[in-house]
Image 1: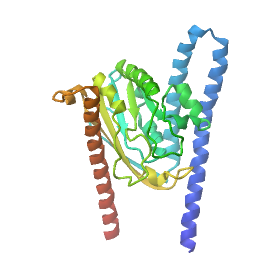
Image 2 (image 1 turned 90 degrees about the horizontal axis):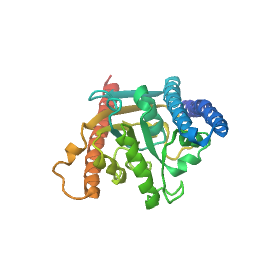
Image 3 (image 1 turned 30 degrees about the vertical axis):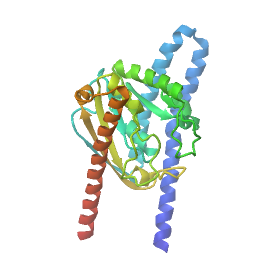
Image 4 (image 1 turned 90 degrees about the vertical axis):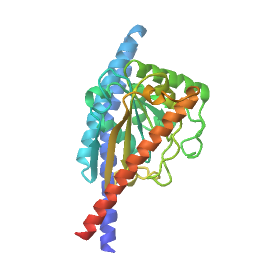
Length: 302
């Protein structure tokens, strides 16, 4: 009983420390947002765009560095990241997209911390609208200029995937324009966090895959296991001890090359790319799970 009590106490301490560090990591960025709002009041409207771009870049660099530091300080969250296929997210100025499985709030933090610093300035992410209501974080995300996915359901409606179609079309057009200009578009194709078996992907929604249909891009994938252990899907705060394995790889150097033999309209091609990406990420998850199983077997034998 005392052993279980110690484990429980260690878990609570880990969550408290992680939560505290998470808030601390957000405060500097939030202060920058507040300062930017004050400066905006003193500028003429035609100078707002330049200010917003500068502030967005500063905030992105801050979040990448601060969340790298957070994971470094939370040593009980052990990361094992495997990169393949050259430079992550490709060359500066070349259009690219990144898709990742979604089992936890920790997924987004992990992806941000892994982004190469120079390339991180090009990244824009599709984010569920209710996430913008989170104190501190929502303010920072809006100031960065991340795109809201207009889900019709409330935050607690886990099965409601309906979106405001007109608004979503507007957001996707802006998202596509950013990628076309040499940016990186990132999103979780499952839409909402996986509340079932975390090793089995939910359906990859095809909507945002219209971007790599319209624009020839590099397609990057990120498969991760263990995030849901550190930050369970039903938990308010994460930070529990966990082994997190990540595999980052390039699915294709050219999205249009994957569509050479595909007939049909934009929707049909987007569905095809979603299917290919899902199969690739699922294969990556399977490899990571197999490595975990092999490691556990070796530890038991030793």
